[in-house]
Length: 432
Image (tube, rainbow, N blue to C red; front, side, top):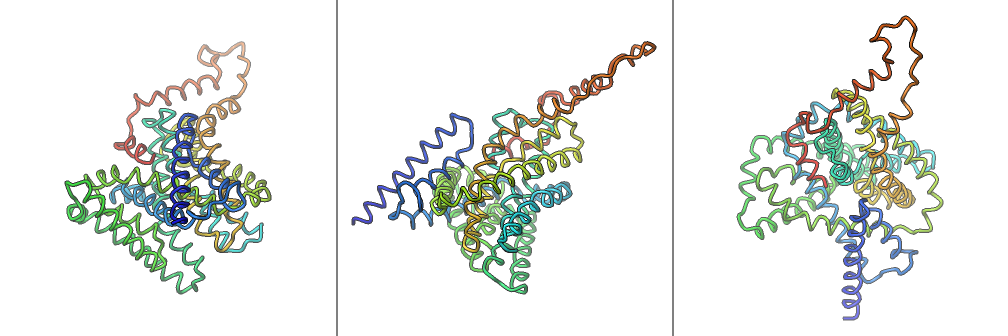
């Protein structure tokens, strides 16, 4: 009875504390993720007041948090949207992978952590935070901007790539042979392809089978199906998160919308528990030794994300100011970096402290980069106006720099005047 009482007290204190931290983050205008991580560090191993009674329960809640994160991510996309984005945005996705995964892999090898840790840290530095970015777009009033569909397209490619990356990482972490890892990857690719095909051809039938006018029944069926599929996927070494993502893709229409509305509060609760659990398992004393590598990695990958956004926006025909805004918005890392690091800490424990410091830096730097990248680029990229020639014509008397700036301001008209991709605003909202 004493253990149960301690569990209830600790669990109640954790949930109440998360609620207060979330409110504080909302008032400041930042993502609550860094506060959740700091709370976990404060009450975990080596922290101020270690929690023992509720640790096992929080670990289970953290697993559910990852599953719900990926389920609701899948619910935000239809199979047709994923296929369309894959066809149009894959060059940007390739550039995104090369520029942002490479620094993480190189850093792990330089630190002597080995090839498996290099694959894991490459994922940590590669994937942007959809949740943080969606909140930034909403806070800055950019949901209708011309570059917003480009940003969402890059995020969709990253999310879809997770369905391939996570099973590969899981196989490597499990120590499977080349044949075993290849089989796992083939199973994952086959599963993704099959789900996309079935969702495109028979999505209505699947949604109809799951649909219910009773919210309680819909919640139980979707949640039960997701956890079951996630467990089977985990048994096949494919990754529970990927199984949950595929369930989300398979559902569409009113069923997906209804399930999203019902499960979003649960997702937020268990995702917060996941971040706390990650902090609980990270010794605060292990962070200072990796703080300098984390800071260097954060600066390098912030610049590579800006370059990625520039390239993707340029491909889409967005003008210069919009290219800078795209790059700055993509800087933030968050939930998926922690998910990947959480999978890898069993093989290389030092990834946990490095990933914690890295995410803390970029989840704070991300909103700042989204706000200030374009103004700074304009300020430092402005060229001094040449002196007019005595014989210059009236048109030539206007400096070229001023004429190009005027053209740029016309091209970057307010968002309301520019046509936007259908559904981009709703998609951005759903990411948050």
